[in-house]
Amino acid sequence: MPFIQTNTKKIKQLIEKRAAYLPDVNFPIKTERQFGFSNPIHFGLIQVLQKFDDYILWLFLAQNYRIFKHQNGFYKIKNRIKKYVFKLLSKIILINSKEFLPVDFNNYFANDDIYKKMVKKYGEIVPQLLHNAITSTVTPPLT
Image (cartoon, rainbow, N blue to C red):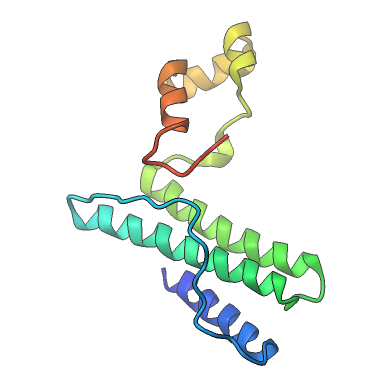
Protein backbone atom coordinates (compact mmCIF):
# COMPACT_ATOMS: atom_id res chain seq x y z
CA MET A 1 0.00 0.00 0.00
CA PRO A 2 2.91 2.43 0.41
CA PHE A 3 3.24 2.27 -3.39
CA ILE A 4 -0.25 3.73 -3.80
CA GLN A 5 0.24 6.36 -1.09
CA THR A 6 3.59 7.48 -2.53
CA ASN A 7 2.12 7.87 -6.00
CA THR A 8 -0.92 9.74 -4.63
CA LYS A 9 1.42 12.15 -2.84
CA LYS A 10 3.42 12.72 -6.06
CA ILE A 11 0.25 13.44 -8.05
CA LYS A 12 -0.93 15.93 -5.39
CA GLN A 13 2.43 17.70 -5.48
CA LEU A 14 2.32 17.96 -9.27
CA ILE A 15 -1.17 19.46 -9.11
CA GLU A 16 -0.14 21.95 -6.40
CA LYS A 17 2.82 23.08 -8.54
CA ARG A 18 0.58 23.58 -11.56
CA ALA A 19 -2.43 25.16 -9.87
CA ALA A 20 -2.07 28.66 -8.47
CA TYR A 21 -4.64 27.81 -5.83
CA LEU A 22 -5.81 24.37 -4.83
CA PRO A 23 -8.52 24.48 -2.20
CA ASP A 24 -9.52 21.47 -0.17
CA VAL A 25 -10.72 19.09 -2.81
CA ASN A 26 -13.92 17.14 -2.25
CA PHE A 27 -14.63 14.80 -5.10
CA PRO A 28 -18.27 14.16 -6.01
CA ILE A 29 -19.48 10.86 -4.62
CA LYS A 30 -21.18 8.74 -7.26
CA THR A 31 -22.11 5.89 -4.96
CA GLU A 32 -21.27 5.13 -1.40
CA ARG A 33 -20.84 1.67 0.05
CA GLN A 34 -20.40 0.52 3.58
CA PHE A 35 -18.28 -2.58 4.01
CA GLY A 36 -18.23 -4.66 7.13
CA PHE A 37 -15.22 -6.61 8.23
CA SER A 38 -14.66 -9.37 10.70
CA ASN A 39 -10.89 -9.59 10.77
CA PRO A 40 -7.79 -7.47 10.05
CA ILE A 41 -7.34 -8.99 6.58
CA HIS A 42 -10.78 -7.80 5.49
CA PHE A 43 -10.04 -4.37 6.92
CA GLY A 44 -6.71 -4.23 5.06
CA LEU A 45 -8.38 -5.16 1.79
CA ILE A 46 -10.98 -2.43 2.26
CA GLN A 47 -8.17 0.07 2.91
CA VAL A 48 -6.39 -0.97 -0.30
CA LEU A 49 -9.57 -0.39 -2.30
CA GLN A 50 -10.09 3.01 -0.65
CA LYS A 51 -6.50 4.08 -1.35
CA PHE A 52 -6.79 2.89 -4.96
CA ASP A 53 -10.03 4.84 -5.42
CA ASP A 54 -8.45 7.95 -3.89
CA TYR A 55 -5.42 7.62 -6.15
CA ILE A 56 -7.52 7.29 -9.30
CA LEU A 57 -9.51 10.41 -8.37
CA TRP A 58 -6.32 12.45 -7.94
CA LEU A 59 -4.94 11.03 -11.17
CA PHE A 60 -8.00 12.17 -13.13
CA LEU A 61 -7.80 15.60 -11.48
CA ALA A 62 -4.17 15.80 -12.62
CA GLN A 63 -5.27 14.94 -16.14
CA ASN A 64 -7.90 17.69 -16.01
CA TYR A 65 -5.21 20.18 -14.89
CA ARG A 66 -3.18 19.04 -17.91
CA ILE A 67 -0.26 17.89 -15.77
CA PHE A 68 0.72 15.33 -18.37
CA LYS A 69 2.23 16.62 -21.59
CA HIS A 70 0.92 13.59 -23.46
CA GLN A 71 -1.93 11.17 -22.83
CA ASN A 72 0.65 8.37 -22.84
CA GLY A 73 2.00 9.62 -19.51
CA PHE A 74 -1.44 9.52 -17.94
CA TYR A 75 -2.18 6.01 -19.22
CA LYS A 76 1.28 4.74 -18.27
CA ILE A 77 0.81 5.81 -14.65
CA LYS A 78 -2.80 4.62 -14.55
CA ASN A 79 -1.89 1.19 -15.93
CA ARG A 80 1.09 0.84 -13.58
CA ILE A 81 -1.04 1.37 -10.47
CA LYS A 82 -3.82 -0.83 -11.89
CA LYS A 83 -1.33 -3.65 -12.48
CA TYR A 84 -0.04 -3.24 -8.93
CA VAL A 85 -3.52 -3.52 -7.42
CA PHE A 86 -4.53 -6.45 -9.67
CA LYS A 87 -1.28 -8.23 -8.80
CA LEU A 88 -1.99 -7.69 -5.12
CA LEU A 89 -5.56 -8.95 -5.45
CA SER A 90 -4.40 -11.92 -7.53
CA LYS A 91 -1.98 -12.88 -4.77
CA ILE A 92 -4.74 -12.64 -2.20
CA ILE A 93 -7.15 -14.89 -4.07
CA LEU A 94 -4.36 -17.00 -5.59
CA ILE A 95 -5.72 -16.71 -9.12
CA ASN A 96 -3.70 -15.23 -11.95
CA SER A 97 -6.22 -13.17 -13.92
CA LYS A 98 -4.00 -13.31 -17.01
CA GLU A 99 -4.72 -17.03 -17.22
CA PHE A 100 -8.41 -16.40 -17.80
CA LEU A 101 -9.48 -16.71 -21.38
CA PRO A 102 -12.13 -14.24 -22.58
CA VAL A 103 -15.19 -16.41 -21.93
CA ASP A 104 -18.68 -15.05 -22.37
CA PHE A 105 -22.21 -16.38 -22.30
CA ASN A 106 -21.97 -17.33 -25.99
CA ASN A 107 -19.11 -19.68 -25.12
CA TYR A 108 -21.23 -21.10 -22.31
CA PHE A 109 -24.26 -21.74 -24.53
CA ALA A 110 -22.12 -23.17 -27.35
CA ASN A 111 -20.16 -25.28 -24.84
CA ASP A 112 -17.12 -24.67 -27.04
CA ASP A 113 -13.43 -25.44 -26.46
CA ILE A 114 -12.70 -22.13 -24.73
CA TYR A 115 -15.45 -22.74 -22.20
CA LYS A 116 -14.44 -26.39 -21.70
CA LYS A 117 -10.83 -25.38 -21.07
CA MET A 118 -11.87 -22.91 -18.37
CA VAL A 119 -14.23 -25.46 -16.77
CA LYS A 120 -11.42 -28.02 -16.68
CA LYS A 121 -9.09 -25.56 -14.97
CA TYR A 122 -11.47 -23.68 -12.63
CA GLY A 123 -14.63 -25.76 -12.47
CA GLU A 124 -18.19 -25.22 -13.66
CA ILE A 125 -19.63 -21.74 -13.25
CA VAL A 126 -23.36 -21.39 -12.78
CA PRO A 127 -24.46 -18.39 -14.91
CA GLN A 128 -26.92 -17.20 -12.27
CA LEU A 129 -24.17 -17.06 -9.65
CA LEU A 130 -21.94 -15.19 -12.06
CA HIS A 131 -24.73 -12.72 -12.80
CA ASN A 132 -25.36 -12.27 -9.07
CA ALA A 133 -21.66 -11.59 -8.44
CA ILE A 134 -21.45 -9.06 -11.28
CA THR A 135 -24.56 -7.16 -10.18
CA SER A 136 -23.91 -7.41 -6.43
CA THR A 137 -24.23 -4.22 -4.42
CA VAL A 138 -21.21 -5.30 -2.38
CA THR A 139 -18.75 -5.18 -5.29
CA PRO A 140 -17.92 -2.27 -7.60
CA PRO A 141 -20.11 -2.13 -10.74
CA LEU A 142 -18.88 -4.45 -13.49
CA THR A 143 -20.04 -5.05 -17.03
